[in-house]
Amino acid sequence: MGKRIKKLKKIRIHREGTNELLYSLFAIVAVAVVLWRSFDSWIPFAAFVLVFGVTWLLALNFYRCPIRYYPDDTDGVVVAPADGRIVVVEETDETEYFHDRRLLISIFMSPLNVHANWFPVDGQVKFVRHFEGNFHKAWLPKASEENEHADTMIETPYGEQVLVRQIAGAVARRIVTYAKDLEECYIDEHLGFIKLGSRVDVYLPLSYKPEVKLEQSTTGDLTVIARRERR
Image (cartoon, rainbow, N blue to C red; front, side):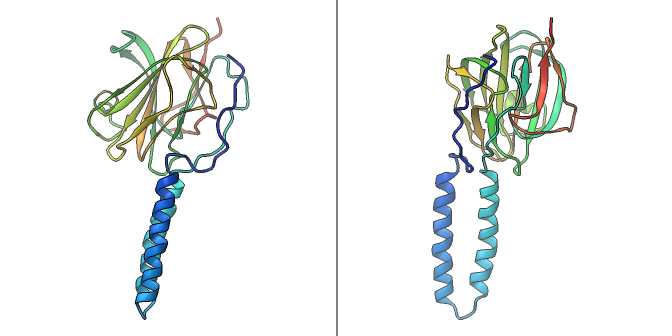
């Protein structure tokens, strides 16, 4: 599975935000026209356009969807599943699925980051599970287990299990996962989308070694966060 396929649609605005952006733009334009025609002064019109125009541009920035392809061979490579910054790089005991030691790498996404999520490895999706939960701040350690989250388990070409966990934050209230049970998955494909600030955890076997450090910025689908050791 070292060869990648490029099924990612060439879009600049993510499909999760298309309707919201269009409907809100129509509403802003409609209200702006009413204000322009209803008042002799231009101040109400200008104030409305300034406030809601900036808000709409922020939403447009949030839903942007860069076209990205990892440029090198993907064999044994783990790429960042999201834009953001590294908040955890450590070995930890994973007790829900693996019941052993794992390398945990966590990426926190602020509201200003791209919020599309990519598959971090090539492989096959074994299962996808969604869990209801709380909405603690996403960078807190307890958020990984207590917050609403979606787990995607991937089996790599080496027969190793990799867990990707999309975590809702204090503001994010919607997790979208495109991964489907038993489908093949590849780096360069979208795994899902999380609205507003949130976090993505990747649990890897200890045969993988980290290539990132705390507070390092990541670019989804491009930054290598770990590599499998050659044996």
